[in-house]
Amino acid sequence: MPSRRQTIADDIRTQIAAGQLKAGERLPSETILASQYGVSTSTLRSALALLQSEGLVEKTHGKGNFVARASQRHTYAGGIRMPFEASQVGPTLRVTVRTTRLPAQGRLIPLMQVPANTQLTQFLCIHNEGNSPHSLARIYVPCDLPPNGPPCESPSCRASGTQPAGPCPPLAEIRERLTARLPTHDEAEVLRISSTLAVLDITRVAIDSTGRVVEAALLVLPSHRTDAYFVTRAVPAESRSEG
Amino acid sequence: MPSRRQTIADDIRTQIAAGQLKAGERLPSETILASQYGVSTSTLRSALALLQSEGLVEKTHGKGNFVARASQRHTYAGGIRMPFEASQVGPTLRVTVRTTRLPAQGRLIPLMQVPANTQLTQFLCIHNEGNSPHSLARIYVPCDLPPNGPPCESPSCRASGTQPAGPCPPLAEIRERLTARLPTHDEAEVLRISSTLAVLDITRVAIDSTGRVVEAALLVLPSHRTDAYFVTRAVPAESRSEG
DNA sequence: GAGTGGTCTAGACCACGAG
DNA sequence: TCGTGGTCTAGACCACTCA
Image 1 (spheres, each protein chain N blue to C red):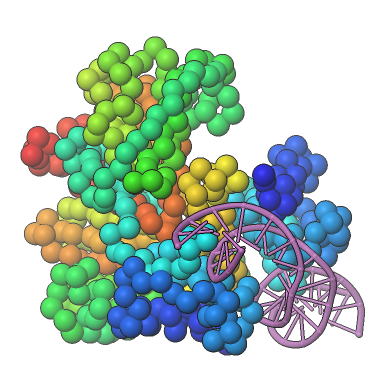
Image 2 (cartoon, rainbow over the protein chains, first blue to last red):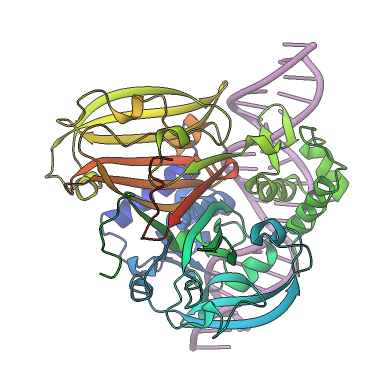
C-alpha cells in the first residue's frame, strides 16, 4: 500500500506534468497544503522532499516552495574533456577559490599516492550561480607540481571543479568514484541546501603519463540540481582527438 | 550551530571510527538511544539516516541498527568493460530476469532514437545478494536486435545490470547519465530499502559503430551500498585492448 | 507475544525573507 | 512584523522479526 507521502507526491507531480502548476510558480504554503491533503505538516514536507529530490520542486526558506525551472539543472561532465567542451552545458558559474597548503593526511595519502605529510596545495572552490552557491570542490595537487597556475584557476574549469589537464606531462587517466549521501553540516551550510537532501559525492583522481597522481578532487554537488554525465568510446579510437 | 541530529551522528560516527562499535555489532534500540541522547525518536532516527546514507549503519526493520561491514559496498563499473573485468569488484550477485515486449513510449523514444511504438524487448533485472535484493535494472533493446541472446543474460553481467557488448556490430560508445533521488514506492518495495534513502539513478545508452542505439538501461542502485566508478583513458590509447 | 523499526500526528519554537 | 520553511517533541499505531 502506497504511503500518504507517495500519494501526495504523485498528485503534485501529475499536476506539474499536466501543466496545471507552471514552472516557477509558487505552491501554497506547507500549512495550507497539509490541511488540503488532510495530513500533518511533517507528512506533507516528506512528500515535497520526494519532489525536491527529483528536481521538480525548489524550496526556499522563508519564501516557499516553487515548481522548478528545467534550466536549474547542471551537468557534471566526467572523464577527460577538451577545454572548449568544458562549460558548454548548464548555466554559467562564477568560481571563488581559496588556496592553502597542508600536509597529506588520512584519505589523501592513498588517493594521491604520496607519503604522509607530503605538502599539498589545496584549492577550496565554491561555484556560484548568481547569489546562490551551487557546488563545492576541494582540489589537491602536489606542491611541486603547478608550473603556471593551478588547474582550478583556469577559466575553462568545469561545472564540477576544474580542468585537470595542464601543459606539463600529458594527462593519461581520470578515475572517478561517485556515490550519494546526505550532506554534512558544513556542506549544507555552505551550499545552502537542506540537510535532508542527498548530495553527489565525487572523488576524482587524475594521473599523468608517468603514472603520477597530479590531482585529487573531492566534489560535492547537490543531487537535485545535478546530473553527472560520462561518455566512453571504444578502445581503437578514431583520430578525433583534435576535433 | 550544528543541529542535534548532526551532533548525535558525529558522536556515533566517532565511536565507529574508534572501534568502540565494531562492524556487524547491533546498536541499542532507537528508543534507548533517543533517551540516552535526550532527544525524541524522530530526531534520533534522522541522525541514523545520516550514518545510513554514508554506509556506516544498516537498518533492518524488526531487528535493529547494525554497524555496517565494509564488504557490503558494491561498485558499479561504468563505461565499456571487458567481460572478465565485469564482476571482479564486490560480492557475487544472483540475477533474476523477466522479459517482456512493449512499444517505445515516453522517455524511451528519444533515448533509443526510435519512432514511437517501435517494438522493444524489456529485461527487468533484479540483482540479489543472498536473500536480499540489491539493485534494479530495466534494460531495453530493439526487438530485431538480439541474435544470440540478450546482453543481460550473459553470465558476465555487471553489478549494475548487464554486459552490453555483443558479437554483432562492435560497440562504439557508452553514455551514462547519473543522478540521485529518493526511490519511488515501487522501487523501495522491490529493493526493500527505506523510502527516505536516496538511490543512484543511472541511465545508460550503448551505441554501436553504425551509430545505432543497441541498448538503453535504466538502473536503480541503493546509494548507501553502492559506488559508481569510471575510468577514462586519454585518447591516444596504448594497445592494451586485449590485455 | 515481545521487541524492533516505519509512518504519521498535532503541535512548539526557531530562522529566514520581504515589506 | 508577518508569513514562510526548518527543527524538534512526545506520543499513537502499524509492520516486521524472532522466539
